[in-house]
Each structure stands twice: as structure tokens, then as C-alpha cells.
Image 1 (cartoon, rainbow, N blue to C red):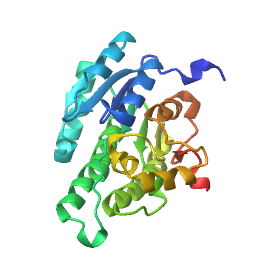
Image 2 (cartoon, rainbow, N blue to C red; image 1 turned 30 degrees about the vertical axis):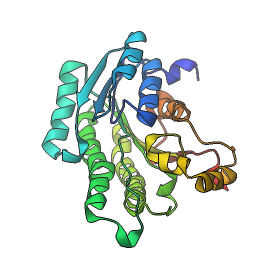
Image 3 (tube, one colour; image 1 turned 90 degrees about the horizontal axis):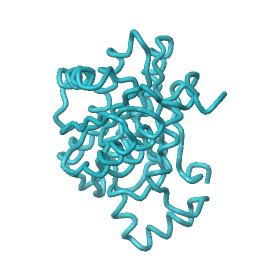
Length: 254
């Protein structure tokens, strides 16, 4: 095996929510490995990531997209649009996600639906569309799961349910598509410094409790996820199917 095994030169990647946080770190890592990038952007500015990709001499196609309104037809059309503007998608990273916090007895139904729309339904629709487009030539599908794919968490029932579901979906799709050269895997980040975890970072007592439990002794940074995404997107992972790779500072081992 050589470093070229990890190269993504000539590949086209679609990263949802690719402008900030974990998504931005993965987007830049894939571009640094050689991929051209399409990314969905919703509400948050993408200029910084676009400029960084341009500086790497890679193509970047930002797409204004609200994944909560995704339909099967729109998912298929998204892949057609990227194929027309860049090239057919070789790598799909289902990264976009939202979180809502409240005690289970008070958890608003609207919040439950919002989380499921983005964190599960959009993952399914985009993965299904990717599977159709990759059937004849293979490809890589990666979904960002969570350590809460394996644990219950506190005050985040919708998020936990969705993240459990995407690991099951990862296995189900891998079983169907591995023989077609489509690798379907997931990455389970631990506690990473992003906007989604800001409430925990700002809670001094909860923050200290988390740090005490993490064997690495620190919060993860979005950049900690980039290399894992490159690995699962590359030929180095050609025999990796249906797995969820924890990048969690040892949290799940504790």
C-alpha cells in the first residue's frame, strides 16, 4: 500500500452541510486529498470554505439547499445537477444534522419531526439516490453518526433515535450494495467542538463531567474527523463495508 491508495484525485464528493463545523473539516480534507467538491449550504455562509477549496485548485459547487424539504425527486435531481456541473458523484458524505434539547416528557413534536427530517429522512433519500447513480460504477457513502448511536444521552431523544437508525441503515445498505462496489459506512464522532455542542461546552458542570470521562482528556476538534473521512472515501477502504468508525477520544471504550 502506498499513499496513492488514499488519493481522491479525480473524484467528485458531495458533502451535506459542508460549510461549517465537522462538514467543513471533512470538505477540506477531501479536497486536500484531491477531490472536487459539491456541498449543500443552508443559512450559514460558505465563503471561507469555498476560498480554501479554490486555493487547493479544486472545483467547488456550493448548492443552497434545505434538507428538511427533500423529496425523492429532488434528491435524484441533485445528483443530476452535480453530474452536469462537475461530474457524477463518487463520494457522498451525509453530514448535515441538527439537534434539539428538552426533557422527553416536554419534547415538542415539531422538534421531533425537524430532527428526523434532516438527520434520518434526508440521509435515506440521498443514500438511495446515490445508490441508484453508483450502481454501474461503484462509489462511497459515508454517514456521520454519533456516539449516541450506541448510547442514550440526555434530553436528546430525537437525535439519539435518528443516530441509532442511521447505523442500522448503514448496515442494511452495505448488505445490498457491497457486491456492486458501493461501500456504505459511518463515522461516529464523540464530543466535538461545534455549534451543535455549544450548550454542553457552556455548561461548566457538564463540560467538566465530559472531560473527566473522555480518555483523551479533551474535546474533539472538527479536523479530527477529516482523515477518517478520507480513509473511508479512498481505495484504502475498499474492503470496509457496513462499519461505524468511532472517532471519540476513547469515549466508547470507557
